[in-house]
Image (cartoon, rainbow, N blue to C red; front, side, top):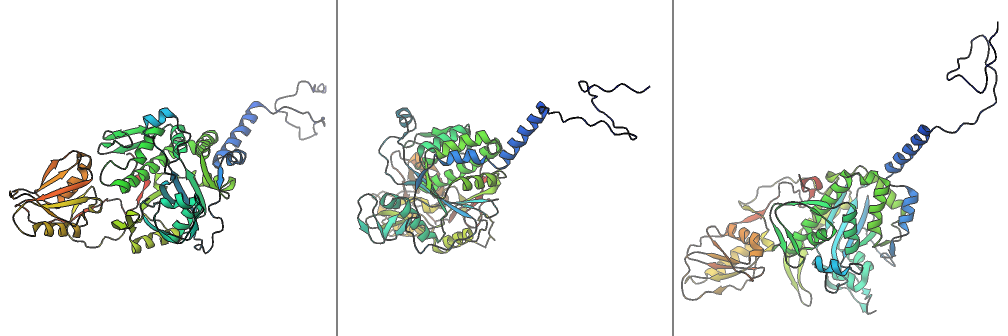
Length: 493
């Protein structure tokens, strides 16, 4: 007896068609997608979105939040484009959106100078696997091209200037032109960050961890950190990167802290999953872009490109260097004390950027004169020499020997009262204790004596025990030819 026909209302879960006859043709039945399928589609969408760094629609909405400037207006005779992408990252002292409570707590009072507090060239390699960050000291000796003063409208010819003052005279346009003239590196994009966007970014990330082997205290910025590891929120992080009076290293020491902070920022962003989470990435990007200024060309496509590149970033993908300095304390009439770049070494560094080559490659170490390793470079230490003995010309001889060893002596040694000093003494302000220790390494047997309120100028009173000046040097085992380090070498272990 043949089987009764199957009811279409109760289909079998897995019908198996017979080989001898075909199953009856049924009209198509529209079914809703099961929930698991919808969940799968959603998951795939999120993965695709994350793999792109962040979605196009989301980035487009963020793009609209960016304030725009035209730093490349009417620029001619620019350097040839190299490989990769070069972004001029400028940190200004803008604080319009800082609350009064934040001003008091983080020592942000006073009127802004409307100048650049930080200047860096960020080079993203052509294969998007490496970021090279080169700090340009704010006090660098620079020569501006002819321009019109943005504030007064006065026409200026080319003239000497401190690099950070170019912004006050001619805004982003003169800053880019001056940097390109000095480095011969073509700037592709311009990004300007102020205090507000910096603090917001750190807070959205949940803070950034930094480590210090020595206590860091700066009465000007309010920074006060004990030795060890610290998770810094936005306000404290701003104190950390702004501190210039932690020691005699001044602006150069501050740039090293900025570089270490950026390495820690990369580590935080890449290890916390921010770059793989579109919503978190959006929040961080919105915090950054909500109070920055950028050129017209820095838009949706560029943000997506950077998002994809940073997807595989880690601290080891970033490398940091400061322009090699040839002369500290280069005095220019009407400008004051500046830093003059080493022409040969700086040219080699910027050539590496143009050629899209790593800058943290270790150099072949050449034989060098015997010297003692110290924490603070002699070029950063100011010294006044005083002859405390009856030996004529001793002060001048020590001043010359210290200057030859790289110390910034006054070149005007003085003489102590008639009483002969037996032991050489180094008088120093406790805030410059690391500088004092570096100077003591150059004067074996010298006594260290605190003198509160003395400031950054250390005083050497030569005693009868003086023999000679030892050469000292700063040496970091991680540093390559340009003093460059990779991010994984400077973040907390």
